[in-house]
Image 1 (cartoon, rainbow, N blue to C red):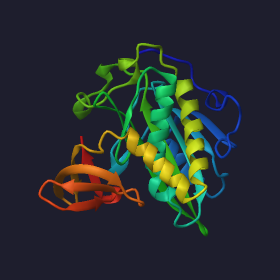
Image 2 (image 1 turned 180 degrees about the vertical axis):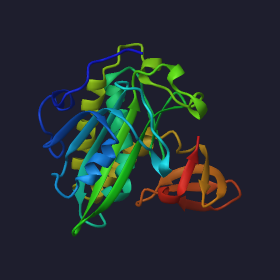
Image 3 (image 1 turned 90 degrees about the horizontal axis):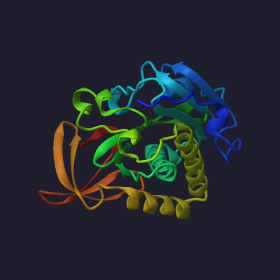
Image 4 (image 1 turned 30 degrees about the horizontal axis):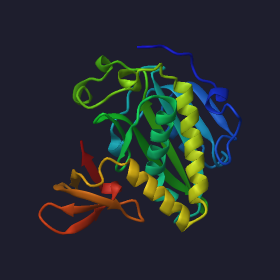
Length: 266
């Protein structure tokens, strides 16, 4: 595995704070998780705060799954957003993070990943990374933390168990050297961009959803979903205004599935 130097705040934001993100930046060698760090301090930190870690002791994904990466091998960062109740960002947080991650990877490498509903980043049919969006009440507001993990420098031997046949890193695919700094800085820049676009309202969200659909390798293809203990198969046709996936079921009919109680089977 190629080893790179630990990242600094200047690596993450080479031109300084962005329009919304980066007025507070916390860079750590080791954290329990970047999401947990920001959630625990959400009532005192500024909107747009960023947390980075070289290693997470209890990194996690959706539905309580563990997220593990060797020290210094991945992009592991989270951002804190303070939103009004009912903000679409609360529903679309994972999708915003996954699209920004894809665009950052494409700009920094010769790889072109895709999004997979609701929170995955895929490359060559394998899992490159994931996004975990978590929210909680802060007085009359909602704090949402969007955490992104991207496999950058791992060898295939680092992926064990069920991940052995499912996971991949940029270093496995890219023909150019992989810079975690370039990927991480691009991720924050693209996420800041999409937060600005969607802030204008329905037109901005329409632009985001169209771009996300174009990047999604689920749309128009057969997907298998686990929902409330049942398995559903069908063709994914769109995402709703609530960030649910809309599926034409194999046995007939159209149905939407919410991420909160649905798992997409890889």
